[in-house]
Image (tube, rainbow, N blue to C red; front, side):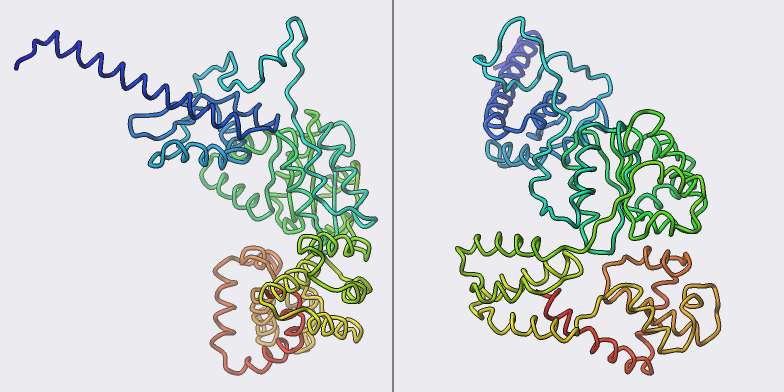
Amino acid sequence: MFFTLYEIFTLSFKFNEVVSGVMNSKVDEFLSCLENEIENKTDKYWLEQVVFEIGDDQNLNIIVNSEFIKNSIEKKVLDTIKRVYKSINEFGDCVFVLDKTLSITTNEFEIVEEAEVVEDKPVKDQPTYELEVFDELFIGSCNNLAITAAKNVVTSPGKRFNPLFVYGKPGVGKTHLLKTIERSSVSSFYIDSESFLESYISGIKNKDIDIFKNKIRSVDILLIDDIQFFLGKKGVSEELFHTINYFLNNSKAVVLASDQKPQELISFPERLVSRILNGLVTDIEKPDQKMFSEVLNKNNNEYGGNLITKKEFGLLTSLEFQSFREINGVVNNLIINKQTGAGNANYVAEIVSMYSNNKVLELTPEFILDYCSDLYQVDKRLVLSKNRSEQVSNARHLFIYLMRKHTEYSLNQIGLYVGNRSHSTVLSSIKKVEDSPGLKKEINIFNNKVSSKENLLTKV
């Protein structure tokens, strides 16, 4: 059978119409399923900025008109989108398509039921924050002020407490608070010092620093963690100063976190410290016993009250912990002991004995530095300096090795801490220690000092 060119064109057109109809039907099915999964008003708002389309390859195209909307969708609802689409199309994937010409004039994602629509009723602004996220935090006298200030920043960015500076020892919850702020606000961006520094240096080298600036300045709330690692970095400190100025001048909010007070950031430009002090400076202290009791209660209730006995509960809550990391370590051990059937009686007894005898050591950089300084009889300041004498270098190599093994600091962060040394220099120090048989004794002595804490509190 032969077809004329006209007939072939007509058949092709009809086939495309059928395929298009099937695709549209799939999109409608997907949107209907997604509607049942999304309840959060903020998530609904972001989905209204998106056009969904199923391509010939069966992939779901998520069409957005800006990187900012793409990032927000990824952070808020992408997991739900993938799960729902997988339920109706097992073989398809979800792919972002950036179309800057896309104009969203009507809601592409209708969720509001007709019964809720009232004519002539003024439309309220879409919500830009969710304070309910803060309900997940454990709040006590140690962090109440910082959390209250953070809520003010979320509800009124740039209006009060700007910049907000939060400081405290490692493990007390500074990073957790910053990430809670990010989750609670639609227009927010969290970045740690290492990522900030790497992006800044990359921007300078590639002559596209404006891309980095536009990215971090496009939001209402900027959150920068561990800014103490900018010490001695003149260029990035200047960029931080100008960034803070931009946010202040444009009624946007900046939240900074550090393990040091602003006044202790000695090598920071004076005008930068002045800007920080002009906002609100507040600390987060170690968790108190009441807060630890709340954490234990929550986990004990999740196990039907059978995680620990009332006596064990009383023994544990009489102890004093220095950070949430220690508390999380204790809770993780209680849970794993319960799951394996080992019971928690012996573990609780060991914990109480350790704390009663003050044997628990705090694995901070300062503690490790003191050990290396005493071992080699050199001044701590020399260990962190550019001094290359054999005694000082050996102390520095061991300090770097122990920092990597016993803390959560990255190679870059360790390099910044030890006089702004490079990633490769840090790796070289670690290798020198590993290849040195003479240092095994010193390492074993240190490991013996801290093994009890690591085994009982932080290892699961």
